[in-house]
Length: 513
Image (cartoon, rainbow, N blue to C red; front, side, top):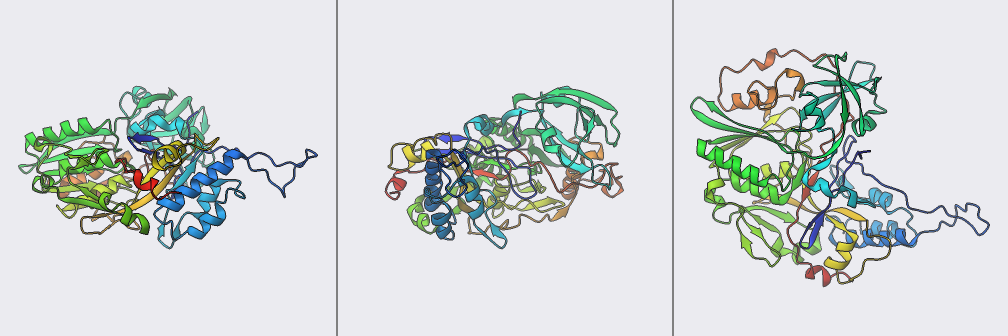
């Protein structure tokens, strides 16, 4: 059985990261078990007034308390709640307790930090490997009654069960094992291990069926790339769904191809990209930024930590175009000039599922080149960078305590440690994301696959770049399915911006008692 959320584990020298997906309106949920024992009195009867707190829960609470009090971006703002709600002697559920005390003040709120008691099973998902049918979907109501829903397929990953069954973008998944999909069961259907799916090519009556079994596979985030001639100007196109490490070398090869073809403008399609690794984001920024800046250690972004660590990590606050560091602080470059395209402009295709690292790269590059934002809704507005620390990593590598307390080796904490800003200290997505400058709606049912110049959002981007003769977007017919549901399944990497740069852990050793 697949999980409806993911927490991803990432280890790089001294730092390890976890990530998640979610299925709610605004923020991800997460898998959890409840290890809290049932409290009893000596007679064996339940005693609700004197709960027994296990060693595991006490130690897990201590772990969350310590991390939150040290490195959490808003540690000062919630200090009293950390002390009272995450007291190892009284807290019976540190997962829920943390959810209840995460920082929130008006539009500025932490919707992303979370605690897990099971990160190990999600290890492979750091590299876009998961058990899946291999599709990304939006949820629509079938009719005005809102009693049934359907999955409208946004994309299908190559060599996946869905692709091998012939399912494509725009297909409408209507039934599961002969029964309707409803607002109550759509998540269990989506994350099922196998089943018979009834679907159609854009109507609300199933005309075909497919027997699917989910497999563990790598979902290649590079969905399509092309080069278009726009009145003699070469415009590149890349559809990219997640900043993972495996895709770095293919992205470099594509950039070299675009450079050799004389591409000067790029349509960067991030509409289903929920985020990922800072390392990959910064490599992409080096390929797409102006070489004159990329080659001169120009400031790309800066981090703002909590009040204490703005001073402690002063040397680690700055990110430079085309600069990476090893665990000893030695600097080298991500790319050489053969991979820098020489772009003059970017057209970014976005949606509400565009989040975190996919927002961050646009924030970082905007001071250096014009970027048009194309879409019909704001991006998510994830302006923070996170670590996810396993308890063993925290205790044995990042503090001076040396030994992980009993029972919590499988606990982890995805904790927001900073908010990012461009070279001038500005963060235009904070708090509500980018607002598109060019309106275009994502319409999977328009009859065109991603990368086709007639696909609605790509056509709008090409028109913005000066292309004529594309289809008239205003004349599109509406699909036969109903309105989009407020309940959606976010991309598995939704809300992730994991900074896996080696952190100088001796600084934590000197500060954590």
